Structures are given as structure tokens and as C-alpha cells.
Image (cartoon, rainbow, N blue to C red; front, side):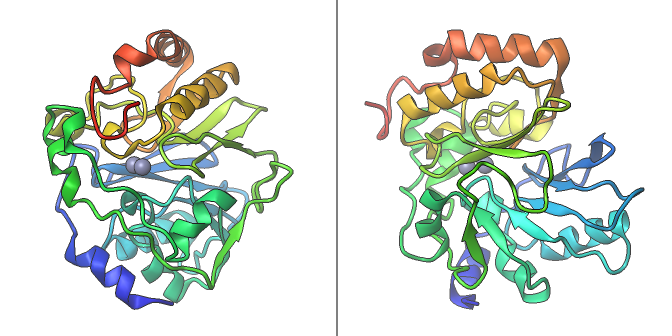
Length: 282
Ligand SMILES: [Zn+2]
Ligand SMILES: [Zn+2]
């Protein structure tokens, strides 16, 4: 385990919060969404039936104790996930992973195209403050963009679309925000864990992040580098006709509201999602 990378994260830690901070919500009996400051992580597994669960994304830096605590509250004192699945490797989704892996010696799965950023080989491009007037966009140059190194635990997701330890779920490649970004989908009940393929809060605006104002949005603009791929990914996700969506940021959305908002996002992607200008546009 490389500690250097993780302490770099901790130095660049930004205290950010939202009214949802620390709130957990069982969206379905086996799908628990927890908001860590401004980002969501998900525990998949039904505590009434089993102590087996999988953790999707690992929150902000310095949240390891909090994540262990919610896991214990839900799955008992011995709680330990079978695996971690990452939607992508941005700092707010892998923030606490190195510390968690010190206690949990478990496999971590990600798309093979994301692995260079998770083995210290590549850094993400820096945040682009020019994409929006919002304060979070302006702050984004200070967000850590370096890859982390968890090569001792990381494995590529199976090529056949299955997700280890998550029966009846499939992973779907939804690039654009990052090259190896994935979403997770369960056809049986239309449950979607979207990561940052699209989000339900205007992530560039500090006010909207703090108040968690619901508003369909494409991927967070300041970190998204391939807008054509991001559009294709939103289209792919809309075609799945999800019934419930947990996104990387913002509150879960479901039913007719989700269907209507996703349709709108596809139809008006350039107006709603894409920055008018910026380093990574065109
Ligand atoms: Zn991201
Ligand atoms: Zn994110």
C-alpha cells in the first residue's frame, strides 16, 4: 500500500458539506445510499438476509472511520464488504480507499481503462474552472487530480459485464467523464447506480450542492474531458429505462420524474450538460 498518495489527498482535503451530509437512505431493501459530505457511496446487500455486501465508491478523503461506522451499523460489528467496486477514480470517489484497504484486505474492481489512474501510472487532467460561474467549478483547480496506487488490490471488471459478488447486476461502460467510467444496473427492478455519468444536482454550484437542490445535470463539468462520449453514455443509460437512480452527487431520483428528466437530458444535452466553453470542450 502506498501511503504517500493518500497523504497527498489528505493535505488537499477540502471541507465541503451539504444538507445531505451524513444522511443514509435505504433506496431499496438491499441498496443503501450514504452521502459523505457532497458525494454518494452505496452499500449493496440486504442486512435482513445476509452479512454479505459490496461497497460502491469510497467517499471523500478522511472518511474511512465514518464509512466503517455505517457499515457496522448496517451489517454488524464484523462488517466487511466482499469487494469494492469503483464507478471511476476521481478523488471524491476513492478518497478513503487506501485507509479502508489497510483494514479490509478485499479486491477492488474497476473498468480496465480506469486502472492506470488507480495504479499511479496516470493522472487525471486538472479541473477546469472555466466551465461555469459556480463556486465549485472555480474551486476545482484545487481538487486533487492525481491517480492513486492501489495495485495490490485492483482488478479489472469481468469482460462479460457481470459484477463480482453482485448477482443479477451488470456493469455498463459509461465513459466521457473519465475513460473507464462505469454505471451499475439491475434489470429486474431497474435500479441504476450511475456514478458521475449524470448527476441530480448542479455540481458546479456551491449553493446547489449545499442545499442539494434537485436538478438533472450531465457529468460534473469541471472534470469531464470527452463530451461526445459523455453524451453517448447518457443516451445509453436513458435507453435502459431505469426506475430508480442513485447518482454520484445529489439525491436519488425515481419513477416518472427520472424518466422525464433523463429524456430531457438526452434531448437537450448541449444546453443542459455541456459547458459553453472550456479547456475540454471541442
Ligand atoms: Zn467524477
Ligand atoms: Zn464525483
